[in-house]
Image 1 (cartoon, rainbow, N blue to C red):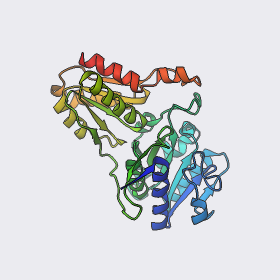
Image 2 (cartoon, helix red, strand yellow):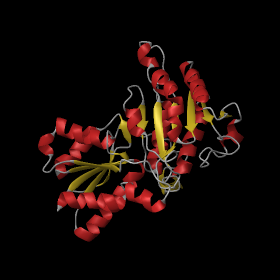
Image 3 (cartoon, one colour):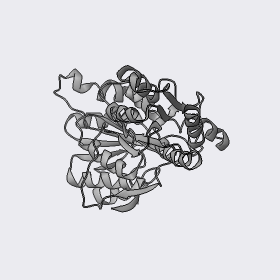
Image 4 (cartoon, rainbow, N blue to C red):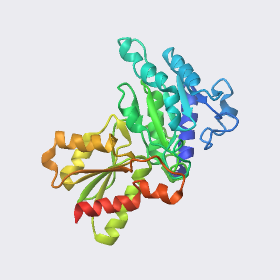
Length: 327
């Protein structure tokens, strides 16, 4: 194993798959010579050229539509949206075309594309550049949704997403890009399955379910709760929310008897609500206390750093929620 950044892990995944499969190409704004807004596609143009690393005008509907068509005829596009907030500009291409084509053709047509890019708060980018959008995509059948929190999972899940025959939304939280973690050497090929959660921290008092950057906040909160109060929190990383691995979640709840689902998007109609609802539907007898969800306050994200930190469900708010459930 070696230490590398989240950005480098994603870059390596794309580079290795482009070397392996000539049908894989990248398309998006400023991904070529500039290397992407956060430099995730840095140096890929030098190796693969302008026919496979395609810079586009500022027209999300146009280049996403092009990628959907390319996928339908056998290519494997990786689309980068500069900000995931912009998905609404190309929503018809994603939800009415890419997501439904396999079903509408009776399985004759596949749309093997990856829609990737950054989302989330923490950088004071304001309301139109800081949203978490995963719950919106989860509403539409036909799209898988991956939300990795670590460099290891980011690389392995992205390789799986590129090889998948279905559209995959691959969400990269902007606060994760410069985090570091263990990743196998470049010559050691590996994948992480889409739809399989992972227990990142063992515990016995409460199951804390999260993903993406909130997962790192949950792990920090768990360590501080152990040191300060002696509570032993189990942290489950969903890694993907479509498919949703409730088997791992409920296996953890069977041990702890308590469930808290945390994510950065709003609590209303969020993935936490789905996790809690399915826990009550599938195994209510496991719960020793009411399950809870914790998400962002129901407001647009402000530019102000103190206000942004106040509304986001990060470490301070996670600790407060856990203490309410265990005291």
